Amino acid sequence: MSTFLLDGKTIPFTEGQTIMDAALAAGEYIPHLCHNPEFTPHGSCRVCVVNINGRFASACTQPAVDGMEIDNSSRQVNDYRKSLLQMLFVEGNHVCPGCEKSGACQLQAVAYYVGMLSPRFTHFFPRRDVDASHPDIAIDFNRCILCELCVRASRDVDGKNIFAVNGRGIKAHLVVDTPSGKLGDSAITAQDKAVQVCPVGAILPKNRGYDAPIGQRLYDRFPVSVVGDAAANGNNKK
Ligand code: FES
Image 1 (cartoon, helix red, strand yellow):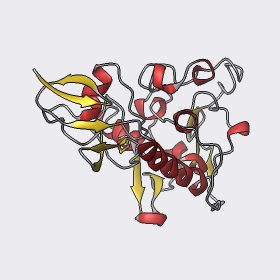
Image 2: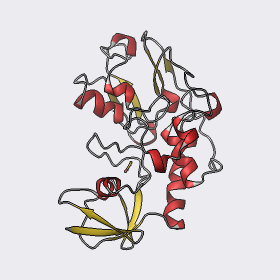
Image 3: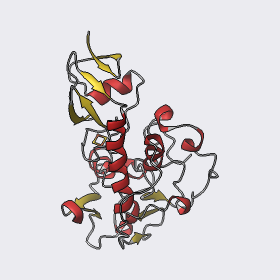
Image 4: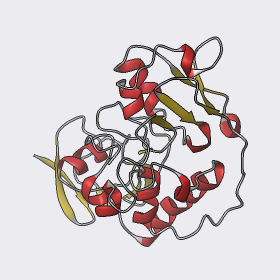
């Protein structure tokens, strides 16, 4: 059996598993946002960064290798993750107290986990639209973190290719692939995986807002390190 050390704990793995796969299978949490065990790794958010034998790499894309020694919890690694989260918070408009996803949002939960107390950087305050054209689903582009989970879910599970990311760098943004660019003109339904998999409050089913009171939602009750991904374990709205 091949193994590596994660913060001194022996983690077994099988050929082809990533560090993230093996760690999650062993019950060890590595913070992540764009990773969801149901989808192929994307490696874009970098929140899962770990230090492997002195070199930084993303745990969700790095194949496990026998004998690796991995730092998943030092102050240096935590500070790196915290900076990435602080950048995400200022790049969009994440107004947690007014967001119905508060308490079930993975971005918020991971920020709590790393001990983020302030955004630190200057807010961009972008002006982005809200698309409420669909009868059952709304998109608030202000909250999108470009994890592309909806893109992957719509393409690979729903078979609809409704979402895409256009532009690069600071200009990258999520788009709805219809002639009007509106969700209401697409074939998406509230049951689609693309709707259920959003880790933040960007894609929301309508008519269910605040169904679980603040204080009783998943991450209000348990830290993300204990319960993991809300979307992956079927608790995306609780
Ligand atoms: Fe690994 Fe996003 S979770 S890069």
